[in-house]
Length: 372
Image 1 (tube, rainbow, N blue to C red):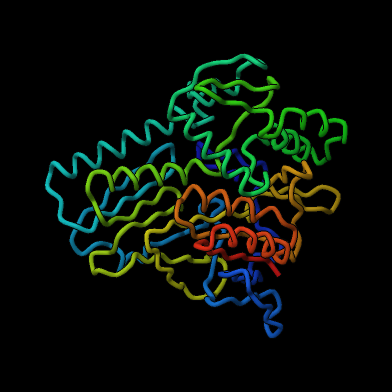
Image 2 (image 1 turned 135 degrees about the vertical axis):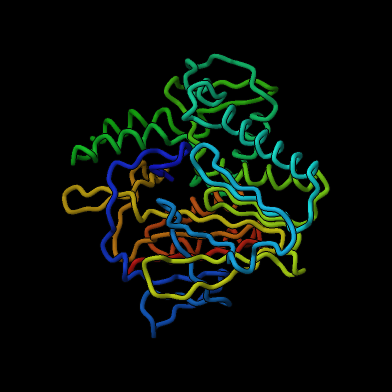
């Protein structure tokens, strides 16, 4: 995902409302056995019918149903990290030492995220790896080694649809699309040589890459990973209930102060559907979308999302997917799965892939929104 105001998101080269934005229909796929509703073109119905929206340009206004989710007794920790707002809710009374401890942990984790995973920080560990020459082996931190293992699992689970090594392809396409032209097949093939998880190696605490231009961009999962770290650290401190949000990525644990599950509302700002709540029971939620990042060349609209298999950006049409929301046990997994499900031209294709994911991970839920 490429955002214009987040340090983890690439700057957008073009930004205006897509055709049919106000006419988009909801595709609701909560379970893979969804059925098409012929009475409402473009609408898929599953066991639940909840409205999902796209988070691009902070359109994902995942609201904590503010009036009812704010703890009646407890504490809220809010701020901005790497230009992205965060919020942590603990629904119990805290003494000054507990508040200080939580704030220190929040700062420590955000500092770690910036120092290790932020490719916009030229001094981060990831930036140093991106600038390595080919085949030079260097030691990496235990935190990064563990993270790369988790990323590899997500790459494998999504059949390489989630691929954080396609940054060079994105740069190539963006440069050409801004000039109102397409890259040549030769250019695409040349740049593709440095893309792919198979070009990356890490074992026994060492890292190396096969091509000097191979690089990472973890914008598709690092915010979710940070939310997971914050959640797990709060639990380790002994807090049994809470909610963590950073830039629209949310993970809840335990219960609200009223002893009910945490509820979040997904509010589509461009159409008339009512806000509907989703209960999170020790679960996370993340959304991926393309609504505000695209370019037009020769009467074809291209989104910012690069398909790692076709090596080209997704094409935008009335039937193409506008956004995908995923609920999963971890926010990192929800983040990566939402990214992968965006890489299908039609909702039917995405549904089939989602059904395969649900066979392996029956606890996940997903919703798809189209434009037509």
